[in-house]
Image (cartoon, rainbow, N blue to C red):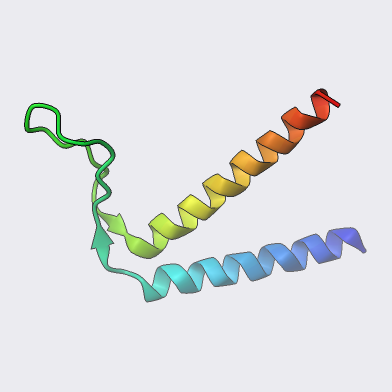
Length: 74
């Protein structure tokens, strides 16, 4: 039963992520650092929806890794 619920959750997350990427196709450039000698470090232009979804997935990964690490210190 737990596997079915996880599978349904993954399907829902994939559907919502696809919708976000589809509806936000405007390309944006994210500036990573302030200017150093007149040079900006930024990522190549990517769709805004993809940037939002990748940020969400990166947050999930950080939270998962933090949870695994915290189990070692209990």
